[in-house]
Length: 332
Ligand code: NAD
Ligand code: UD1
Image (tube, rainbow, N blue to C red; front, side):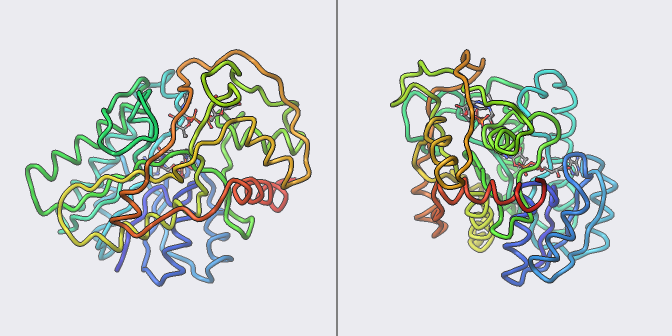
C-alpha cells in the first residue's frame, strides 16, 4: 500500500514514517518545512535504511497536491500538515484558518479526484474544550476556545460532510492527547522553534541549561497536587496508532478515536520522573495559571483498543528518558 504523508518531517509525522517504513509500506512524503528541517530525511534513512520520495511543497496549494497525485499512485493519506501553536493562532487567526483548512480541503479534494478515499486526520483532544468529567470518550460534546482548536473541529466537520455526501469516503479522525518523548535512536524528537509553549520541550531546554527555570502554571487546581493533569502519550505509541488505524481502514465511514494512555499525570509528577530517570535537576517556580488551561483531562482510549487493537505501551519514565536522550544526542 502506498501512503502519502503530509507534514512528514514534523514531530509526529517523522515518527510515523519510520513505523510505516519498518513495516514495508511505500511512502510519499511532503512538507513545506515551515516547522521542520530537511535533515529529518537523513535521520529517517539512518533509522530505517530507506530514503523515501520527498516533496518540499505547500499542500495548502491545490496544484502542489495535484502534482504529487499525478506523479505517484496513492492508496491512503495521513494528513499531519498544519500549524499547531495555540498562542500563535490567537495572534494570527487568518493564517491558521487558511493554512489548516486549505491544506485539509486541498488534500481531500485532489485525493478524491484521483480515486483515493482513505484519509487519516490529526485531530486533537483540544476539540473537547473543558470536559465536565474525565476520562473523555469520543462522544463527549465538542467545543473549542481558540483558532487552532477551531481549525481542528472545522476540519472534522468538513470530513464528516465529505462522507455524508459521498459514501465512498473512509475517514479516520485521530484525537491525540499530549504526545511527548522521542524515537529510541535519539535521532528524531520534538524540536520547536523559539521558546517552547509545551511542557516537555520546555523541561528539556531547562535541563540543557538553555532556559533558567520552568514556570509551573498554577498549583491551586482541583487535582491531586494542585498542578494541571494531562494524558501524556509516547510519540512512538502514537505513531504505531496510525499504522493500526491504516490497517483497519476496511469500512467506509467516519471513524473517530482518542489516542491517549488513559492515565493522567500532573506537572509535578512529570518533573519528578524526568529528574529521577535522567539524573538532571529541573529548577522550577510556581506561577499564575496560564489563561485557557484546563485543570485535568485524560482519555478513555478503550475504543481504539477494541476496534484498532491498539494500546499505548510506553510509560512516563520511557517518555522522559527518550525526550532527554534526543537532546543529549543531537543538541547538547
Ligand atoms: P509539527 O509542526 O512538528 O509538524 C507539522 C508539519 O507540517 C511541519 O513539519 C510543518 O512544516 C508542516 N506543514 C505545516 N503546514 C504545511 C503546509 N501547508 N504544507 C506542507 N507542510 C506543512 O507538528 P506535530 O506535533 O508533528 O503535529 C502534527 C499534526 O498533529 C498537526 O496537525 C497538529 O496540529 C496535530 N496535533 C499535534 C499535537 C501535539 O501536541 N504535537 C496534538 C494534537 C494534534
Ligand atoms: C496545549 C494546547 C492544546 C494542544 C496541546 C498539544 C494550550 C492552552 N493548549 O495543551 O490545545 O492540543 O498543547 O500541543 O496551549 N505547563 C507548565 N509550564 C509550562 C508549560 C506547560 O506548567 O511551561 C503545564 C500546563 O499548565 C499544563 C501542562 O503543563 O497543565 C501541559 O501543558 P502543554 O504541554 O502546553 O499542553 P496542554 O496545555 O495540555
